[in-house]
Every structure is written in structure tokens, then in C-alpha cells.
Image (cartoon, rainbow, N blue to C red; front, top):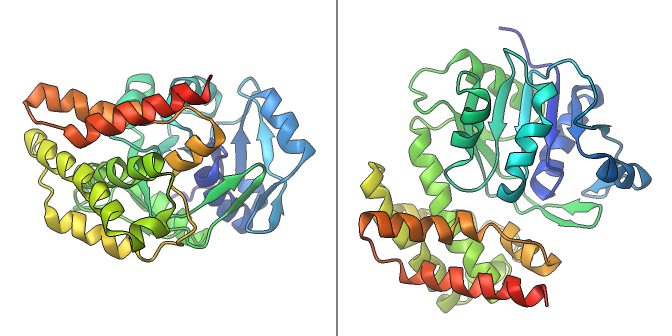
Length: 307
């Protein structure tokens, strides 16, 4: 098995920077960051700092001619996915593995439309509490990346290569047998905690300590559980309750990505969370009152920021 020697990362937010730093710690020459010229100038003027350590990543623009990467990690927001798929084109060769860390349940479909599904692996990140402020990223727990083929009863060669890389780079991972169910499980979590945190402007500590905040989060998740049955994915109350173990291990000061977007005045991923839940609800005749509320409130919050 040929080991992964070079990795291209696109999206240097809290998640992308956290995992890129681990790859850099393993071997500074193995990782490069794809960014437009404006971002590159900004990054080079002030090194990215992750948990107090400065990282002088190798930055390349989408137009730069490069040898295809062994692995491309996509860590942008949904809003930037279409552009990211265009920007990685010089980094994708016939044997390049593509791994998306985006929230939601549709990024892999978009990637497959652009590059085919032969070298695509499904992935999510769980329990990472990274927060980015300017050029600084901090986290107390890096969580883990759950990844694999749709069915991982037997590990494919691609899965084994990524597994080996993560072990060398000290990146915690999990390879679920049923990856589709895991994607929906993470979608359920994001729909609940990300959106409730944005509406309440609350870090994880509020959901750990305030029962009403926790219940709001859970009610958002329950609507995803109901919808999942209609696409053949069985989630249950046990999956919701099981998230508490992760939640209570998170830093109380940690913030979801959607809360960070709201605080920074950025467009959120509400279309791919509550928006997706509402569309599926209409399709399958499932009521989604909590996500209807999330959608309207977060959209209103975005509009108020632009005025």
C-alpha cells in the first residue's frame, strides 16, 4: 500500500486549520493550503496561530501548476463549495482521494458530480471545539474524523491509506460500518446544536447547564430523526441522548461554527440545515415546526446584520 505523502487542504477556518496543523506537525512539507491571492497575501503577512503556535503553511493559488495531491481535504462552508470544487481542479488526479468535512448531507453528491465518486470518501468531524478569531485558532479537543466508504464492513484501499495517514499525523478517527447513517447522525446534531446556539447566541456551556436550551436543541434533532426514516436511515432517541456524552465533554466556552458565523457577521449554513429539513419535511409530509422557527429567526438575524 502506497502511503499518502502530500495533502492539499482548502478552507482554513477553525476546522481546516486544526487538522492542517496536525499534518504540518507530522511533516511541514506534506501539506499545502489552497487559497486565492488575496487570502494568501493576508495569511503570509501574519502566520496562522493554532493553540499558540505559529504555522507558516505552504500556500498555493488555484492557478498554480502543481503535482496532483494524494489527498484533498475540503473544509470550506457550503456557500463556498462550488468555488472550492473549481479551485481544487489542479490538485485532483486519477488517484487523488477527496475527503469533505462539510456539515450537512449533500456535499459528497456535489463532489461526485464534479469529479466522480471513484475516489470520494464520506467524512464528518465530531466533538472538535475549535474557534477561530482572526488569524488565531484554539481548541481544547480536536475531536475525531469519521470517514469511509458508504459500507465499511471491509476497509477499501482508500480507507486504509487515509487511516494510515491519520495515525501518523495523530488525528483521531473512526471508521463506521454504516457511513450513511453516521452522516445523518451528524446532520441531526448540527441541526440541533448549531442552530440553537446561533438563535440563543450561546456557547456549549449553555446547553450543558440550561435545561430549556438543551430541550430546544433536542427538539430540533427529533425532526431529523423523523425524516431519516423516510430515506431508510434509522435514528432513535438513543442517538440524541448519546450526543450528551460528547456535549458535556466539550469546552463550555466552545462555540459552534454557526454561532461563530453569526458573531462574525458571515452568512450561515442555515439553508443546508433548517432549509434542508424544511424541504424534506414538505417532500415527506413531516411537520418541522422547530426548524421552521430556526430558519426564520436565523434568516432574520442575517438580514439585520446587513442593515
